[in-house]
Image 1 (cartoon, rainbow, N blue to C red):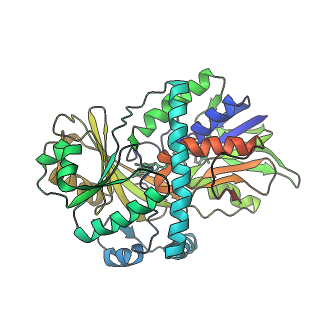
Image 2: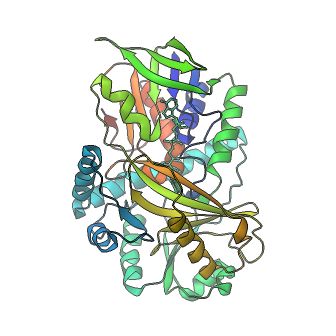
Image 3: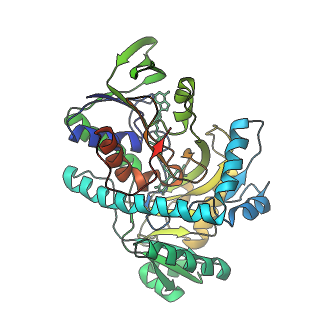
Length: 416
Ligand SMILES: Cc1cc2nc3c(=O)[nH]c(=O)nc-3n(C[C@H](O)[C@H](O)[C@H](O)COP(=O)(O)OP(=O)(O)OC[C@H]3O[C@@H](n4cnc5c(N)ncnc54)[C@H](O)[C@@H]3O)c2cc1C
């Protein structure tokens, strides 16, 4: 089949690799000058199977209300005159119901476990390099009540088939000795030894090069304007590159456009509940012996810390604020302030690089992977807070679906 993959983020490129492996003729279209330059560029770096619980959970509504108007809050809702935002917000509240949270957590956990396995296969098959570390993820708790809740959640993850261990403060220190440099001390933590970390942008860029060597063609600086379909099936994609428009015909089209996915599908009568949840990261160079190497989550502040070679990536915060990607200094400085408290000599804070990205989120954080009702048109999008964690399994699953094969993971596949 001749397949067009729309979008060269971590989801599009990983999908392209699997489709090419399955013998298809694959062409990737991307508006940026290279792969992984939008949301997949500077994320938290965590392959966090253990953190499957979505932000839409029973404790979220009270937290969001408490934090309204607080510029440094980990979760911040900025009300806008946008029906898209309010519709998504209402669905988010619905997904906070205990039963919905349980189901969403299970869906994500199953896909995440499968993804972890697929990432290992992909690494073995390609040798792709991306500063990856297999030292587990330690989630730190500085509040006793939050820690109690985390122990209940750990049990859910364990019952779902994934090892997540409860640790005392002293055990946390054994796992990550640089915590000794911290000005404040956790009350305890949960540790997932099989979780990993790595640079999603380096992975996406390097895997795109591997794909290209394998025969996948890439058109960068190419903006997709529309998808053409008739009553029978998808036919083509219309693009513009350097001012020139072009129609590219295909047998199948896979949409991996992150937060832009709904805009290309709406003219075809397909509505996707994907809305941007903005986050920030700072990348601190010169990370040495006093910076952590085990990947960490500071759960109270919703901050991820990943060691990427000689840099420390610190990412987090969620803001419902439309499609704006400008840097908010207050929110980035809040990240830096917190890392300084935890690891005062982690690296060269004065040279920290700030970044903002838009998570393509569904209200329950469960991605949309599967067929649409237009034959030949498929989606792999809406991975929200976990696109890097879920990329390898989502890609294998959508390739199976496009091949007419049942994926080897039990998951609520979408039919848009
Ligand atoms: C601050 C932050 C921290 C995060 N931390 C983690 C983490 O630790 N672990 C984790 O698992 N996940 C994390 N995530 C989430 C993860 O980064 C995303 O889920 C993932 O990058 C989404 O990938 P994607 O390929 O769907 O989207 P993108 O990477 O945005 O790719 C979509 C691509 O489509 C292209 N595109 C869009 N419209 C058009 C068009 N009209 N024409 C042509 N091209 C177009 C874009 O240029 C883009 O390259 C984090 C996200 C943020 C913001």
